[in-house]
Image 1 (cartoon, rainbow, N blue to C red):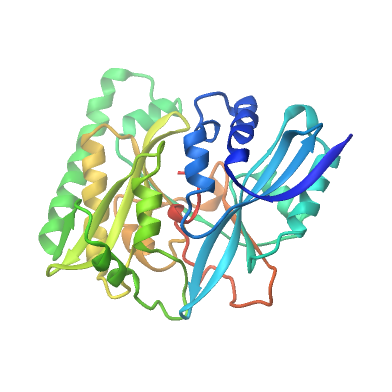
Image 2: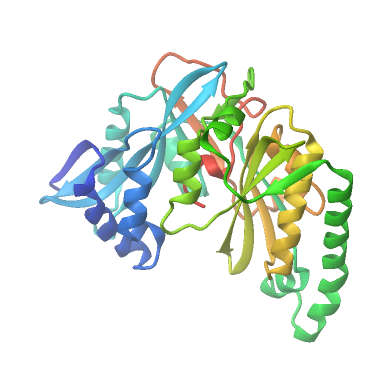
Length: 357
């Protein structure tokens, strides 16, 4: 088969080969097919360099799996995760031989404390469980708010009459607007879109979450993740209480399963920020998205505690696992001696800790 395995730090020389391989699978318009997105994602990440697990055939890149550096904090100590993303094999080279070679490369990774995977489908989960022998610790929660119920019903084939759409949508949209107004009246939070000074951001992000495990946020990370992305477009809202910066809230509009969706990408701040402030930020964003034509709002993350838990308020409802078309399982494996317990009750994850939105 003449496949050559290389473990390489991702550099400029890999960007165009990455794009060519992606275009075979996803076409020219996908984010992972664009060199500026790949460069931003793998080279400009302020948390550390990316490491590629590459397969070459006659000098041509035919498969890749990339360890994206992602730092986490537990009791003020930092741990470096190899967040495994971009698992892709050229159609002509797919099979057990290439898969086993990539798994061998995965086992050769060094310079990280643990492996981290958020498997978005059953096929990916099978790879991590059967071939890499990784343990799935918990599934990410999904909460949704149908902002235009008629459009959702039409997409699912349960409503065929277009003229009925305003009749179905109007009362629900009125309820969302009323809930937003009431939440803003009862809460004491101020929502701003102007970026704070770096020193103020760093002060807010330096809070101690105690026994909780959180992805490291910094002013540099936020600037890279949410301001400098050449393809993804985010809206970032900063939350103040009595003029003091306490947290931020990030959303992104994207088409998902044919629907115009508002994704709640990240919610983070100081632990003492009141739950009603998170609800105010969540409701104000959902209400604005509804007015702008979005059909659905979605949270994907660990909503068991922290900001995502407080943000999951009416009209966002948790979807029972049995009704999900697919689940996102969190897999992890320590490379160094175990530094903390990984479980649903202590590991805060939002879409901002991933790379897909």
